[in-house]
Length: 108
Length: 123
Image 1 (tube, rainbow over the protein chains, first blue to last red):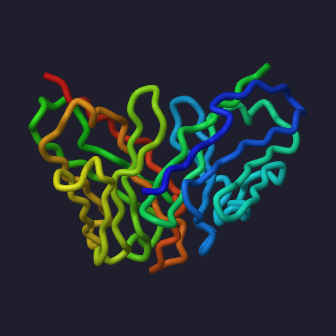
Image 2: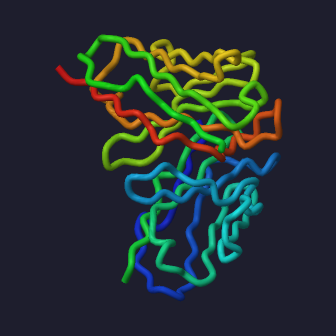
């Protein structure tokens, strides 16, 4: 099974900050770039932000971006907005499906 | 609008069974793969099962293999999760989600989610 490890597990930041969350796969998942990022707010279902490692889902603000290949991937928020404080998950679909453990982004 | 509505959750004793349903609307259901994903209280997301658009392929997380069965009825725009031999560790909010496509493919990304249905396994 492919394990997905996110870092950090939690993060405190301020409005306007640039934030980067990292996701590492236990083996390469490059071939089809089967790496997705989700945002989840308390009491709500997850929301797809980025698919295929770097493609922004329709309707997602451009301050969100994704990059990476092989085993290492990043989600970057260029300038945090109040509505961005949430938990973020990476997810691979190269072999079955696994989610990272989540990164909780809190207001400093 | 595009929508998924789960139902069938509840409180069940260990060892018993439960069938969850997810009714889809607002899109051509028969063209899309579907997933079940669960979230235990205060925990992260865990994939449970997937089914291809036509039901021809299915896959399960190890936690549910041999106990859970995913199926779909494209004439009813509904996907199901039959859960047998339930355990306390199956307690979670169960979401269904749609594969983002393209149609008749399986990308592995989930672009539409329901609101979830809660399953509590307790004696």
